[in-house]
Structure formats: structure tokens, C-alpha cells
Image (tube, rainbow, N blue to C red; front, side, top):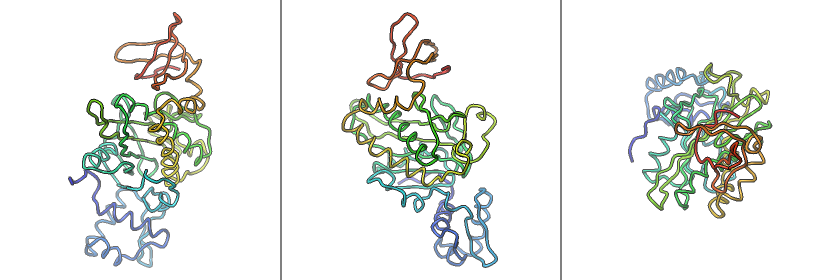
Length: 330
């Protein structure tokens, strides 16, 4: 299996050990043995973790602790809240990757089972739909991708965008306790702006899906966002008025997604469309401008098609189905 382009594996393992220990922390000699390194090497790694900005401290008793360990979405913190049979049972947590989607894709190409999850604290090359950059903040947001292997026709696979968006919407409502709104095709909004985006990427041959990588980015904690998106996006903490548990939110996302994904596999997208539209204030009766490959379509939203496309009633009364595009005005 090829080496994945992630942060130093020793850093990832150290974070996992400290998160598992909770507030008690671990003595440095124990960490040295577990990591297979000398005390001097451990000191170097501890210094690198502090440079990464993680809340690490070395107490007067010599024990090393992560002061906010409970909020790190490592496997040991997520699994107590997980109620799935498959999703998230194979779980990778990294401090830094190029993108979680790319890391999950490499795992999938090497045979990773369906449900494999990749979570990172930081992306150096994160992306959203239509080639846009996805901005995130270290240790505050959720950057998650997972491997799915749906036995469906490749033409059906894009519907997973809506399925995952619905699951994210329900998870945010459950854990953050705030109202949300779905925007076609892949965004979850709060009253203060976008808080979540979904990006699905497929590997397929004609008639066969090899795998689909589902990426989810959620702005979770913190009261501010980078200036480039501050006016259009929000964090869950800003709206909820308090910090939101990232491990619980990751688990809730997977818990909600698994039954929705099962419905999608067994019955197709149709049974899920009404659920999706029930959470969207803009998918029916809203003036809209859609840009797609240099062409603009203006009209009024008229729900979703059976394939999950946005139905737009033009000014001449004809209804057009949009399967892909950028909604630039609601």
C-alpha cells in the first residue's frame, strides 16, 4: 500500500494516544515507548505538535495532556456516539493532509472497504464544487471524506450529493440544536449563512461505479471566519451561542447517513426527495438565476426532478431541469 500524503504519522499517533488518555494525560516515558522513540525524539515531536497549534501542555508532574482532547474527532472520541454498522468503522484521523477527498481516494484505490472515513484537522489543498477553494480553520472545523461503493448505475451516483446534504442537515440540527436550510445542490445554511458544503467525486466505468468519495466540510466552532467568506458563511457556534462537539457531530453525520444511504441503494433517490425539499425554503417558488457553462437560466424554482435536478420554470412558462450549475442568485 502506498504511503499517504498526510502529516507525520508520529504526530497523528501522539494525538491519538493523548486524546485516549483524556485529562489524565500520559507520562513522557510511556509515550516514548508507545511511539518507539527516544526522549529527545519525543521532545522534538511534542514541539512540533505545539507548532501545529494543538492545545498541548506538559504539566509540573511531567505528564503530557491535550487540554481540549474531548473535541478532537479521533476514533476513540467518535465511536462511543456511533450507531452505524458500516460507516466509520474504519477510521483515519490526520493532523494535516492535502485534501481529505484525495486521501480517501488513495485509500479506495488500494481497496479500502465501504464506509472508510478520513478526518483531518487541516487541509493544505481543500476544494469545493466547481473547482473552488474550501477554506477551513485548524482544530475548529470538520473536514471529512468517506469511501462509498454503491452498486448503482453511474448516472444515479450524483444523487448522493442530496443524500449526504440531508444527513448533514439532520446531524447539525441534532447536535447544534439550531434551525437549518438546504440549498440546492450541496449546501446547508444557517440564518447567518453557509455552514456546510458537500463534494462528491466518482470513479466509474460505463455501467459500473468503482467508488464514490463523499467530502463534507462543516464550519463548527469559533466566532469568526476568514475575511473572504465572513459575509457569506457562518459557524455553528455563532448561531448556537456555544461550542459544538466535533466528535458528536461526526458520529451524528454517519448515524444519519447510513439509513438514508440504505434507502438510496434499495429504492433510489425518489423516496428522499420530499424529505430534502421539506428542509429547503428556496427549492419551490423562489426567483433564481443559474449559471452553467456560460449559459444563464432565469426563472422560478419548481421543486426537484426524480433525478435530483433543480426544476426551473422559465418566464415563458416552460420548466427546465438543471442537473449541474451554480445558483448565483436566489
